[in-house]
Length: 112
Image 1 (cartoon, rainbow, N blue to C red):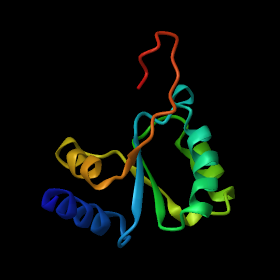
Image 2 (spheres, helix red, strand yellow; image 1 turned 45 degrees about the vertical axis):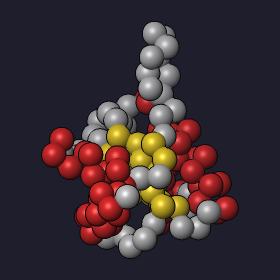
Image 3 (cartoon, rainbow, N blue to C red; image 1 turned 30 degrees about the vertical axis):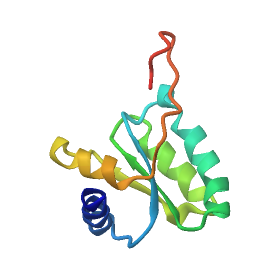
């Protein structure tokens, strides 16, 4: 439990938020990852659970479009694009998050 607490404080300092309940998605920011579905559905969850935060880690061709979509959401202030997360920091992000979201799809059925 102490490790999770430490990880949450490390990630909170990195993203500039204190005490949120993060939902994390780390992937390439591209169409097949279905991040637009995650962003739209997160907005409803954030209304119901106001201490929730969506962290989207990664880079890719759809970043600008996804950021524009996020800005249109009523809870846009709770959606943070972290950019690429270094391998040395990734475990801190996993440990700090309450939920890992994976709405991806693929024709080989193993996207998550």
